[in-house]
Each structure stands twice: as structure tokens, then as C-alpha cells.
Length: 320
Image (cartoon, rainbow, N blue to C red; front, side, top):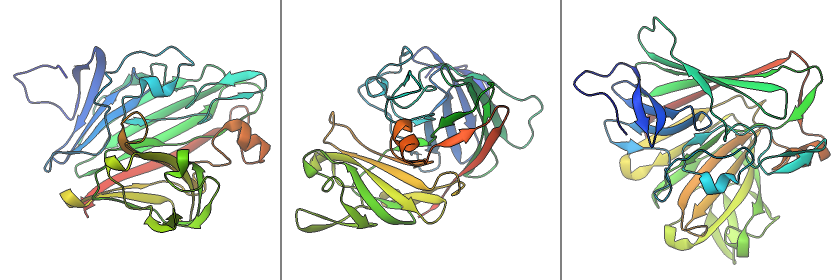
């Protein structure tokens, strides 16, 4: 990453570029956030500075590049935190083809730094969807300690109602000492090639699952050499989860409104897909992995013309 030299960096620094894209750095004594608005509003890094721990996974084999609208998300995925809307899986709704991981990740977001900031760092971003008459904005606020807030605002800007699903998509770096604290009850295996992360369709009480007649604590990350991957759906009892990096003695916790995000999709890749090693913990509005499935299940959300939906997401890091 390139930027200006010879001067102390301000709390919000937009003098950087990353692989040719404008990068905005929000920083205090504890945390450093690197945001690339031109890459779908992506948060590329969340780093605990004192321990030099980057919480988000970055793909070591790919460099960021612009993607055409409707491209395959997987072939452009460099890691970080994305903002999927209005679907996870690609699907057809009302005669329109909605892209995989939604409409917003492959288009540049507008952004700005509010004037007169005091005692913290704030970045404002926003984008308009291509198919649905919707806009999404996100204000990231970094205060003095090891925490920050993301304030989302989804707005209907058309003349007719539309249905949607919505999720948060942080992808975490993991190691065999990583644990996931998730206040879930029932869970279900949604995707599991060759049964590597359990029999597809199997329901279980989080976090204990039987795989090949052996008990597996799904809340503990497996090693890269496990060569498995898959997706589980978890029904939440509370609106939060945490990632514990035991080897570093740290815990990252994300709090969100349970009434809006009642399920988590846990995407585990332990070496079995493209040689990748990471885990995405994704709070979702639920109803299935695509908007079409959610509509069929009667679980899609609806925004009326002029209606807005807001959500505050709090991220904090402490000793764990």
C-alpha cells in the first residue's frame, strides 16, 4: 500500500492506494481499519495494532481488480468484509437475474470524510443497487479504543415495494487454535461436499455434530490439512458472535440486532476448496441462501416505497 510519507497520519487518511484503488485508513492507538470503497465498500483489514493481528482474511493468491456487474464473486474474492444484498446465491426473481452475493460488491461506492471530526475517525459510504430500487449507506465510526461501529441505512427509492434478504459478510483469518462463540440453538448442515463438514441436511444442537460416527465440536476451527469445506445455518438466541484467537489471547465480538439478523451462515473452508483456509461468519435475515428461496418460504423482507431500515453493528476486541 502506497501513501504519503514524512507526516503523522490523521485519524482518517485517504492518501493511500492499494493495487491502484483508493484506500481509506481509519486508525487509533489500538486499531487500524483499511477500507476500499471502490471495491464494493469492502473493509479489507481490521488490525489489532499492539499485537499485530489482522482479523480479516486476505487471499494471498489474488490481488484486487475491478469486476463487471454480475461476475462470479468467488473468482474476484480477495477477502475482507463485504455487504451482500439482496441475495446470497444467484437466483431469478420477477424476471431478473440477481447476482451471486448480490448487487453491491462489484460496483464502486461513493465515499466521504465528514468535516470537523473530533475525538475519532468517521468514514461515510453509500451505493445504489442496479436492479432493485434501493440504496445502502454505511457510516464507520472509530473512537478511542479497540472498537468501532458500522451504521447501515437501507432505503427504498422506487415507486413499488420490493423483497430482499440481507447479510453481513466478514471473512476471518483462522488457525487450529481459533474458536467461534455463537449463541445458537439448532443448526443445520446446508452444504458439505463429500460429507466433510457433516451430512447435508443434518440438524444438530450447536456446536456438537457427529461426522463419520465421531463427535466434532464445530465451534473449533479445523486445520488446513482437514481438506474439507461447507456451509452450516445456525438459529440464534442472541444477536452477537465472537471469534477467539487463543494463540494471540484476543477475542473479536460483533453485536447486531437479532430481530433483523436471526440466523448465521457459517462458511468453513479448511483447505478443501481452492486450497483456501478461512471462515466467514455471516449474520443474515434468513429464509434460505437465496432471495428466491426466502420468497418461497415466506421469509423475505419487504421495503415499501420511501421506507428505510437501519442497523447498528458494533465490533469490539478484548483479551480472550
